[in-house]
Image (cartoon, rainbow, N blue to C red; front, top):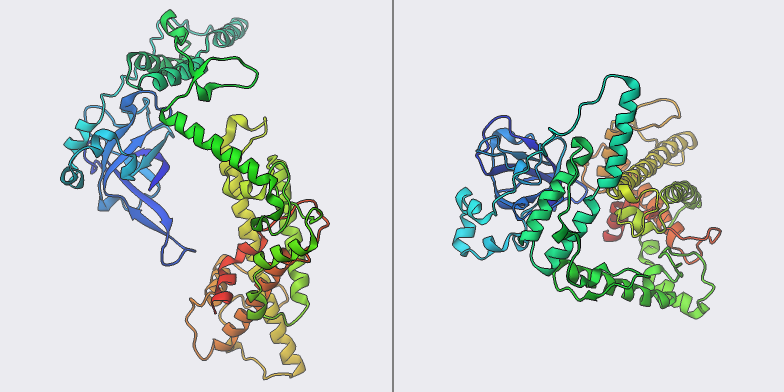
Length: 504
C-alpha cells in the first residue's frame, strides 16, 4: 500500500486543489504472471525526502479523473491553489523529483487517525488540510552577495577554484542532518531547534548552486545532551542514552535480528533451508557437505528434495538433463559475473536488491545500484526463460520431423501446429509473441481444439520434462560440487511450469 514515484503536473486542470491523481501497477491476484492497474481513491499521505520539517508530510486526497486514466505510476499534482503542493514538501519544483506515497491508514498522521471513523471514511479536502502542519517557506537563499563569474578565462578559473575551496570549508549539510536527528530524538521534530535546523538544511542543500553557505549558530553547534544509543560507534567513547523514538526502536530491532542471524549462522550446518549445505561468513550458501555427517546429510536432503517431481514427470531421455546442465552452467556464470561486478556476496541479496553491505565504490549510489542490480537480474531471468521455451519449440519441431521421416508414428499435419514461426529452415527463432503463446499452452491458458490438441500436448510434455531436469540439476543430492558456492535460483525462472506439473 505504498510506492515511490515521480511527481508530475496535471496539465488538464481537472485535479482540484489539495488533490492528486494516482494509478499504480500491481500484480494481478487472479494471474500472478500478469500486471494490472489500480486507481487509488481517498486519503493518502505524501512526502519527499529529506523530511526535515513537520509540514513536509502532507495528507492529500486521491481522486479518480477519467481523462487521466492513461497515466500510470506517476503522481499528478493539481495546478490549482495558492501554493503548489509539491513546493510544500522540501521545496520540490517537479524537475524529476520522486515522492513517497502511502494509502496504508496505519502510517497516516496521528492527527488524522485520531479523527472519528465517519470523518475518515468521508475524507474531504478541508478535513485533510486541517490535519497538515504549516509548510516551511522554501525560498532560495539570497544571492545578492555572490559575484558573477568574470569573462576572462584565467579569472574564471580562479573564481571556480575559490568556489570549490569555499564549498569544502563551509559545507555543513551532514552536520546539520545529524544535529537535527539528535534534537528530534531528544525533543520532537517540531521543536524550535529542529525548525531552525530544517531552514539551515534547505540553504545547505542549495549551497553548491547558490554559493550562500548555511552558518550554524553557536547555540546549535553542540548537542548539550547525551547522544542516542544508535549514534554509538566502535572505538569512540561517547556518552549515550537509550532512545525510545521510532529510529531508536528500528535500530534495536535491526541489531536484534543481526545478532539472531549470527547465532543461527553458527548452527547453519543442520539447517534445512540451505539444502544441507554450509554458508560462509557473508551468508552465501556453499556447495560442499564436508562438515555434515552422512546420515544427517541424507535426512536433510530428504526434507528439502521434493521427490514428487520425479513421480509426476519421469524423464524419457538423458538429453533433457544434458540440456538443463548446459543451460544452468550458462545461467550461473552470468549470475556469478553480476555478483562479482557489484561485489555482492549472496544470491538472495542479488535478486531482492536488498544488499546488506555495499562496496566502497557504490556506497554513494546505493539506491541506484540496487535498482540496477534488480534490472539486470530481471534481464538475465527473462533471457533464460526465453531459452527454455526456445528449446521446447526446437525439440517439438525436430521430433515432428523425425517422426515424419521414420514413420514411427502417424505423420503430423501442418494444421496440428499453431501459427508459431513458420520457417522452413532449422533456425527456430521465436518472437516475444511466440514465447507468450507457448507460455499459454504450457500453463493451460490457451484454448485448444481438435486441430491443436496433439501439438499442445507435445509442447506441455516436453516443457514438463525440461522443467523437471532444471529442478534436478539444481536440487539433486548428487549436485556437482566443482564450484565453491551453490546457486538455487535456476529452476525458478520457470516456476509457473513447475507449479503446473506438480498441481496436475
